[in-house]
Length: 461
Image 1 (cartoon, rainbow, N blue to C red):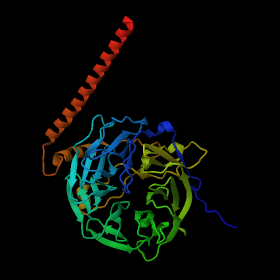
Image 2: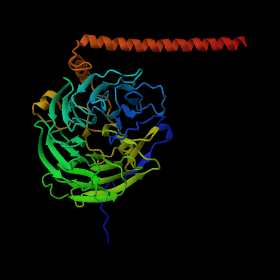
Image 3: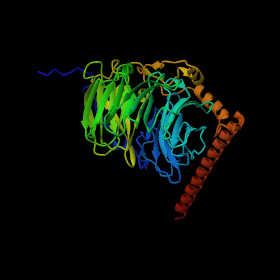
Image 4: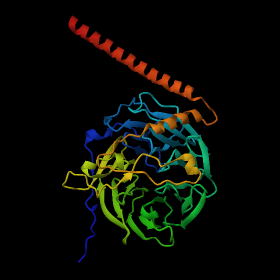
């Protein structure tokens, strides 16, 4: 008799939202690059779009569902296609982007979304010599950003000063496939085309431990830290079967488990939820999301279920826990990119009660950073500051960070060499705000004139 493993996540099911809750008529970027193409937080959803003569992405307030007007303003400061975007975990109005134009840019999105095209970043970070394809904000230190480029270089930026503080340029001998932080940001994990998995001390720029050939196949490997410092990888066998594996970095010789999934060719993007121990695998070009529970008991990675649909995904955004609807027992929400739309997919644990389910929602990572960039670069570590979701977390980030960004605008205008005084930047910002309001007033006046004309035409008839 086979005993079924007990798990509260065994019956998790995925469901796409109704059609009117999707974001329609968006031309998602056609670039062949294995990043998410989408970033989301409790205020906004951002997506990389097709753009003539450069690179662009759009940022929509979450509530702006339905058909998206073609003339909607974009963030369009890059001169080459945008390859990755990521919202800052400590300020919902700040987003980073990187591009084929070799640059990384930091943008400030106004609260209601854009009313005119955004061409000038708050900061432009130049340091890569080839296209930049990977971005990741530090989870606990404020204003620390990691970028990895096709020059095989990893750079850690102090965004406030617009400077590359750490440059890891002789470690990776080939294209970097993925780069991410551990829970408190004291380590970095990279996977690389040279078939090595590396755990790195980010401030020393040295390898702590490495694994040769975590997967035998030659296609891209993805890696993320999961609970207790263990590492989950996705890759391919020698026969091009897709695999998922779990590793203990203290004993890299053998995987804790290695499972074969199927023979599809898309790279599996892993999304790990530390609160539930569930990992979601989304294949680029797949039409499904598989999910597994990672535990301490063999076989360690337990298959739960699969969300399937008809249409394949071009990219995937993953909502932070504080943006979920806890009263509906929602444990994850994905933003699935199709060719012409973005469709939210909700993962739910079926429960009969409407009460807050404490066991599903332990305290989770909040938006407050635990230390500033300078302290982190000086060697300090900070654990994530947790929040309770019991009363529904109010999704606002404090103005404290806005001031940092304002002073950041003063320290680094478009390029770090071109210093400007804070007042000049503020005046520019204010004048652009005034300009935008004047344009709105003008449009409204024109509408009133047209309506008045129509009324008088009707009366004369």
